[in-house]
Length: 143
Image 1 (spheres, rainbow, N blue to C red):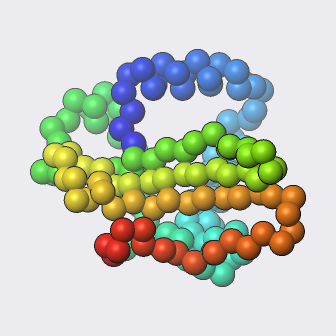
Image 2: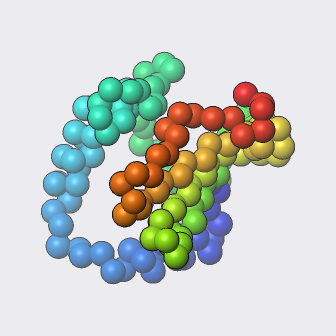
């Protein structure tokens, strides 16, 4: 998702509520362990299914943020994930539904690309008889 200046302002305000007493070295060590142990490939919570895998290995680079912000775009198109969620919704029968969606976005705009998206829905119910289809499904017949 592309972040506009208003998003950065909101994130900055939220960040002000974070405790600053955390050791910077701890953050670096945690980031290093996530980088080296958890990302290539990234597995689901059960550790049985690959969710995300690099095409050509992982790499990190350090650059000057001002130089990066002012640099010419190196590619004709840029791609990003545009994502969103709803607030969990509770129904009178006790069922709670939460939905998240993610779609590829690009500049310049490519509506066919943006039209394809992943939707994930979670359910919570006190009804132990409730059955939920856990298979991936294409809603509109396009794959």
